[in-house]
Image 1 (cartoon, rainbow, N blue to C red):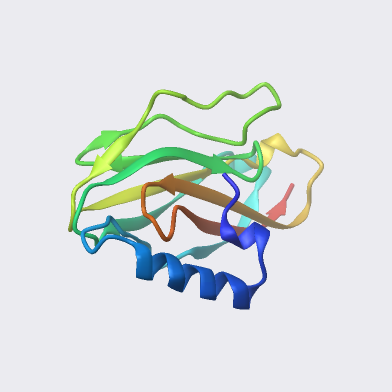
Image 2: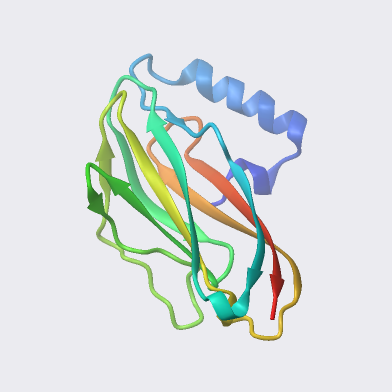
Length: 157
């Protein structure tokens, strides 16, 4: 659960990712997300939960298996929509929240899915100002085993 972004600096991370790519099987799955951050603009607490969708796909040669999502805060949750089926919501562990433990989804080579992110401004009723939240997708991609997307917004009352 500790992705490379948290453990090493940029130069070392790039070198390690290259090494992992060199060692990965030719038919490995590969998660591909073209847009990894999005600004949601101004979000007013009164409007309640806002959502945004990130499209991602498997550009590898074997099934991409995702077995966990996590978020950087309890105000943010996410699920995956694939082939019309909506997966369970995942959020930040702890604070009375428990994520599904026996769930996984297999995305075929060449297929696309949606990562839907939910942000609830009412979780932090006193928060006014800039907000940045991250959602992590954990998969069997041998190089990008933890892929992150980020949302930013300006929260008002």
